[in-house]
Image (cartoon, rainbow, N blue to C red; front, side, top):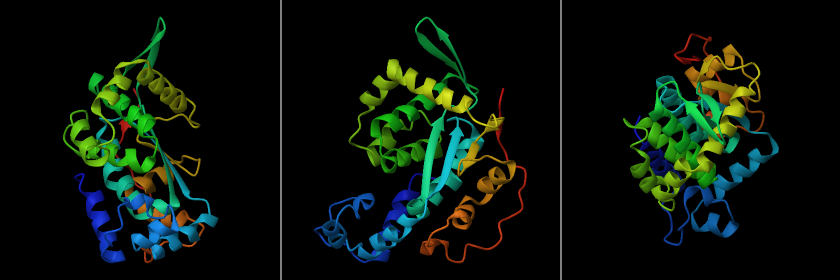
Amino acid sequence: MGPWLLLAAACGLWAGLGEARPACSSPPHLWCSSREVAQACQAEQLCARRAAHQGASPVSVQLYYESLCPACRGFLSQQLFPTWVMLNDILNITLVPFGNAQEKKEGSKWHFDCQHGQEECQGNMMEACLIHLLKDFDLYFPVIFCMESGSDVVGNLLPCLKVYAPELSVANVTACVDGDLGSQLMHQNAQRTEALKPPHQYVPWIVINGKHTEATQSLAMEALFRLVCNLYQGELPSACHGKLQALPSPSPQSSCLRF
């Protein structure tokens, strides 16, 4: 799956809302920031639907992963990102790039050993820095998706930034990766991963609404969209209509085992 899914989804949303007026200059994630913006972008109905969801807690999905694990890349690009595009109003996603890496402290600095080599450590740190620097999930997740869905995760940083976050320079990301900040971010992710209960045995390790079970892991890997629709307790978005049929039986999924 290529990085054009977000653009295609955005185009479909524009088409569904009607042709935008020239006065609309805000990106889709800001259409509901004020009544005036919603009117200018012809998004009143969309914003009303979002308001209806505010009474129920969103479904929480935490993904513990590593940047070069094929199973992690597949889940992020083929399940998590498309589900977020369609159900972002009822979904709360947390990304923790570290996975099966190991850390040790030498002097005052942390050093990391990653399952797929130093390039994976670099990719993990790039994505941790993107999360820290961009802060807004709507900004950094498309960049990470773009990197993970291409053929070269680390090499994709520059073109993905140009498309999805042109306000952030590669130089700022590189300074984070090469400096103490990147090391501290990775150490924090190591601590968050180590604190998992039960301890993770492989990646991707998926925690749904604060819990991990083999059954929910398998369902998320196979049909995350349907799982989120089934778990949400509020008024369902239109995208979920017709998606509430029985979930598939859990089945074995690919993963990168902890080493």
